[in-house]
Length: 263
Length: 361
Image 1 (cartoon, chains in turn brown, red):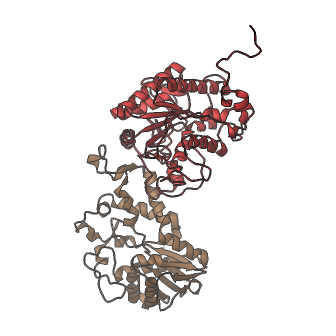
Image 2: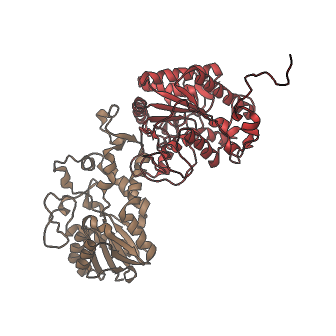
Image 3: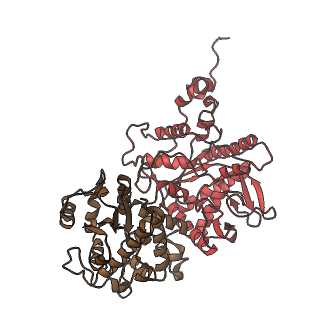
């Protein structure tokens, strides 16, 4: 069945948009893309079932990418909310001060004073709390409350595996690239599913990932900005290319194909 | 020579607050005067540490919300919901030590902080999880390994030590005289082994009901240990008006409660008379006064209700020169704010391990 799908989110909408161009001939769906980059995505709201920009900056991107000043949700079958500022690294920023025992350097576990210890249970709750309070989760809830449209959340890409080659002093990135990366990413994934609902979250396929915590570097090379004219700089480890976008969209279509028509 | 006029004696010309009839029987309990005349005022810049039994949680909350500088050396992680934080022992006291019911427990904590001592008997197991037996409520699901539990306790002791080093005024609410003790080490626990975690073993664990001399000695020792950290430290002691949930003394729980509270009250009175730097605040008397006819208690006749807590704290704050009941708060106050800066919903529940004993009734 052909579906009308609205893809809305921040700059990560770009990968899906360019990916769609690669695979649209294989599908009958109709996709509309709306991207509001950076923190401006937080200037979107939902009122009376319509997604609206609340600032001039957001309005500018709205008009530029969708050609309209608002999106009536019920005119679509599906809404994909992409990224919207919720990332593994943002959720993990708390590890700069609070860490569970298992994330401490074994050589200094018993004497360190840099981190406040929290239990695994509390750490998981903290990650879930970050997800719960995120703009992405709040917007997703507004969409599902104010319309009958089926809403899915497409996760922000995990950082590129080129992270391992980059010399980063960022302790969060070091965690992700290190031995604890897989368990942290798994914890984050579980939190997303627990908070948003397992049937509402779309992750990239496992084969696109490295150790479950990073995106395979081949999907970060040649990523384009939303305007489709410029590439992201080589140092950008967060944005993915059209091939990645196509993979994620296939995951979405698989989910929609195998799902009932429940919200 | 005779006269109808009686000779003066120490009871003539006393103010009304010194006579039961005028001070209590004929006064509405909310209007009783001169219940508390502080030995010393607590300034907004003075750093306060709060500890003690369940009732002390109300004290900490009220002081924080009225602009006093209550220390919190183990604050909740940013973004954690206030109720979840409390479940993990955050924001209740000045560090995550949980309820300290007995004077002996306080002395233990102070000694362990000073020496960094962590013992094997400080931990209990439930299932495959490890619990800090000296604050078993702060990790509801325990920890994954003994090593992890030890690391948590070591860090906690370092934090408490740091907190005490900053303390100007130490407020402690004495709660119980009854405790369970490890026979080999004499260590007392805030909860009977087997209630939250661990296993009760009559060969290893013994019931202890402290008498007035023992509590007095412990409180004097606690004061000395704290004075060694800060010679200028001052103390405000209170007795919890919350009765025992259960007693292992062999007596009726009402009789056991009266013993316990009497001992604690007597010790506070003695400490008040003995040391210039020790003050006593009569939260116990305010709640249990016959004139209240129990209306400050919840229907279970044990938990103090919101009105009782509010009245106790209003009495304290008024005596400290702080305006209350919707009038202006102390300058720089943090009315209604938690440590993380978020305004909480009204919450009067307290975390109380002792109440878990009711599950065995």
